[in-house]
Length: 153
Image (cartoon, rainbow, N blue to C red; front, top):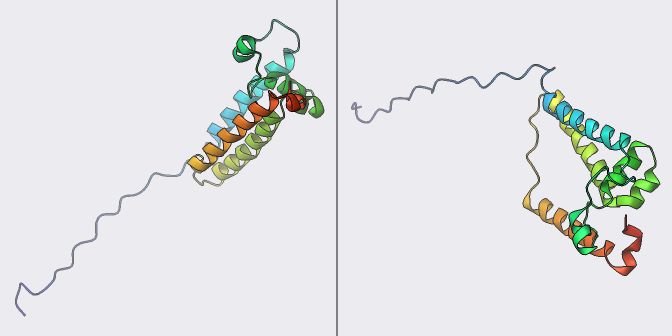
């Protein structure tokens, strides 16, 4: 065989070690920090009653047009949840209660994944964002129609 016809195996590339996993106690630091922020906000809303005027600003959309936005009644709903009155919370903003429950589930999954050292999943895809937008739009439209009075805050 000639020197040209022989193939010389290429050397293996040097292995580069990946980043070391974070210690177990530091893995859930971000979700725990987010929990602390949400708990602080809920504690404030629970202590300062949004049903009494003057504590919180008025919704600008409602003040200018008289129409309810998807967030109208959200503070009253959060106040009712903090005080354990789920019926009043649903009456004030049913979509807000559903969003809070969804947040709690996603946060729990995030903490479990972080504690196990698994990376957090990426954010929602375009289909999820479009679906959320459609739900918000339909909720807003229905709560402002005459037959949607049961969704008024």
